[in-house]
Length: 111
Image (cartoon, rainbow, N blue to C red; front, side, top):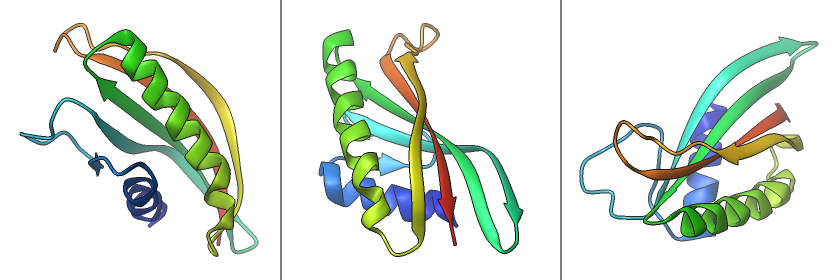
């Protein structure tokens, strides 16, 4: 499952909690990974992942988003991933929960 591969990779790379869903007591800075789409052709899979960076201020959320983008750029070093491209990234603050958040969307090709 590509979400788990990326979750584990980012947690090791960032040294922060990285989860696939919101949990209690994650702290003030953490990352959520969500698959928003996928497909396959000729035994090669592709997925679109949304990676949300949460922090205590807009600046810190943006800075964490930059760290996520740097780590994801290096994810092609993993054996299962052959391509990882940034689709877009943007401020995605959660006004309902009053949390600062950025979201980066990646298109990934994997085996």
